[in-house]
Length: 527
Image (cartoon, rainbow, N blue to C red; front, side, top):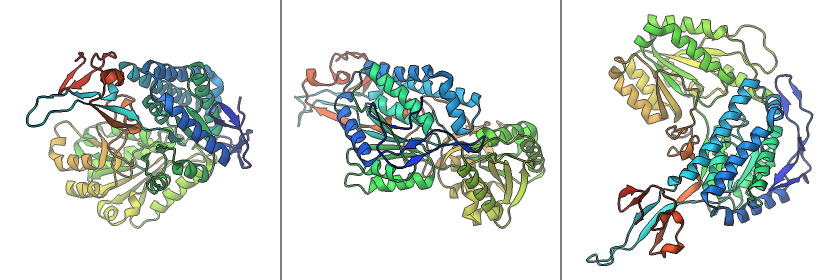
């Protein structure tokens, strides 16, 4: 079922000369399939097809785009066990994770389909004319969200389904009315091709314009840079490293026509552990955080990589419990040998810093691409003096910062880079004593969690998966939930436009029966 070719629109092409293979990280061997990098001609063809598709796709009615998204979900499910097997072979994840992530991907697609059918997402706003207003008449103005144009999506390494070929970026862009060109992630190209085939099959069955979707292969920087710099590309979605995301952001900013790059990048997700919480529930929180730190081999953007706590006997007891829990968890496989290597390098770099000690580390033997989970510790004063200690280590790793007082915790939080999440573990009557800590966290994160773990991102309208730079390139937007669609649209106004020529969302009769703001009142009634 895997051809190793690029989907340029619905065509399978492979005119390039550079080839790749993926790795089975569980077995530490190459997979049998050979993949061909997209040629310059194929890249150009994919972009022009997307540009032409946009001319019609942007105006398709909601029902037609919703049917397309639901069709993609159906086609993904129709691939059955074959897709799950290739996912596991290329990622090292187990079957349960594959099924869970496929379910999330299908749910996302259907959620955006439902959003389209409900219709209010376009934020229709109408201010009717007052021609006899004095001293100047008021014009008729009507505003709604419209799609930007072709979007390039970079697949992520750690979510081969949910943040890759048919993941949230692709689903939200297609929902917005934007054709999508995916740069398939080099670690799971086979998985990407199979999912791409599902999208193409759905596009054919729903009579979508040729080029509404393409899937291109490229292992280096050439493909990505070429796509981002292409004048017909209008926006970029990226999930990955700070280095990679920032490079794309800079390229997009340097274009003659700069375009937005919505990049989700690094995050160490600070957790503040207050004394009464661990005095009363030390074993509970130790168990929860040992599980969270090692979940998915720590390969989550919401992995709790920084634990901040006040010195004292309660912290000592908690760290003893955490050590016991973390060291008894069997290590699991990382996504790729290069990610395992980077994990070891990052971990040892921090361990080598002055004042850092090891609290816990799995001590048994591990297979080649399996990671030994590690917890380090450092004094608050030392952490503040050494920026290296706040760098993300992608994998099952966390550093405990033992602080003298709450003021030191607040100072540390104030000096952190932007983060996706911040968490506070506290007894209900304890948290009110730490308002400065809460306010500091709110200023540095996109999501604030009380008495929980940061791992686990619910797909719903209230989820904010983003945060101040560098956790994301624009803290005003989310990469998860239906509001992710707002990344791929822009507001557009009509002035004194004939009613019959307006989009249905703005027409007087409100034929879509959606909620609109009319003369400052939210209503679904006709004008």
